Image (tube, rainbow, N blue to C red):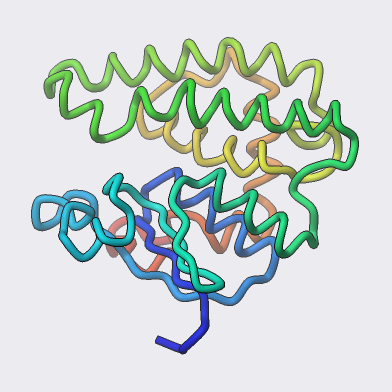
Length: 216
């Protein structure tokens, strides 16, 4: 790999990895992707080599500027602070708070409850209803919030960190067969986001480790 180029440790289907892939694409940051398969070989994230990079044994992890950062929102905030164009956080403190609130609602209040590590604990027959319940509960709240914050995107008419969290979570909802009919605002924003180039190139169906049958 090219010396000095950022390296993103990613899994094609990981919504947390997708958030960071969108940020890198939006900000035009040239980088390498190192796929970490979360189920192959018992989970490549459990290897000693990867644990040395991220003791939490999770993707994403980003090697950049001589450091390694785990946790998607921490990565996105670092990119925002060091490479602020285009901005992913609004200048207005109230709008910025809304962006962080929505981001946290998704990344702390929905996604972890339907993550692979949790689903393994609830038993095969319970995985689908468990994931659906977690997503529906979160989307019920998110739809109400977005009705007061949204413009073209989650907060106003500028793509923000909240949008980077929304699109991957909607993809999770679709994968777990959640009916999105009760969530017109979420669905409208998601459709708009998926038409943007940064969301298209970073999509799970277009990654180096995407299986052939899932490629688009």
